[in-house]
Image 1 (cartoon, one colour):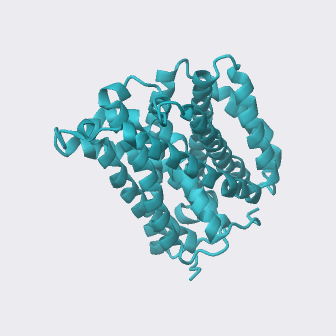
Image 2 (image 1 turned 135 degrees about the vertical axis):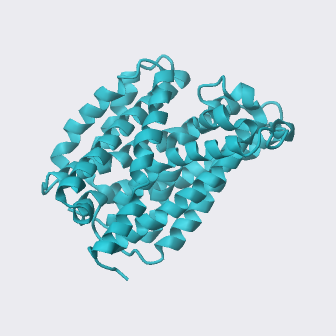
Length: 362
């Protein structure tokens, strides 16, 4: 089933989808609740922990080249346990894709309150279905187009917004010690975990796995810098107390920005940034669901599953009654299910080596 090929250059764009994605919309709120004005310190710590975990995921990909984690887990853990855990991963992705779809609907309600949320959901999921039918290679090529656009837009917002920021909002430094920062780092690491599980999926499509550790390290660093810029900008402009009162702090910041007292409308730039990220996140994470189920059931093709699964995603996206429930659901899913599941990849590697299963691609 994994006949499509992704180059090592394209892997950088997939890492961006997994490690940045739509979490930039709400990450300040999650971090500010526990780390306050020191939230920015949690970002590099979380990415460092994520990079260390990614090394084990890459090592597993080397042992099982061309196989997703759904395929190699039964070989590592035995058929029964491997299939059971594979099913749990798939269910986690289904729930996460549904919640992220709903999260982007909440953004739309703020930006375009007259637009029916269902219309946006149908557009976003419709794009996902179309791209999923075309194949993973087509999806990756769309990421190649959108990621530079997104990075450019975010850089413009940062450069314009930094003038409105104040270093005073970062003081006093470490007012409550390191413990809140460590808790924030753990929370941020948990939010990264779904992207790392996504990495364990798409490494099966990579044409060559050599140098992947270096590519991963460089990408983690650059994406960390980008996220750090966004988190720091929001703290410096809004302050911690104000951040906690905003549903999407980054949108609140862009509405305050202007150049020379007359050039405004930077929320329009953020809208151009947000929709491609929404598409790349939902469509990208939809592949482990559809392809994973097909592999779990030993089907020859995943494409007949795409439309029924999309309808399930649409239905589940409507379940949270309000934004607070949605926000808590995303955090609980990341912290108590996806994070522990992703943290098992080093264990899988140790078991695979101890049992002598898999092969080396080096």
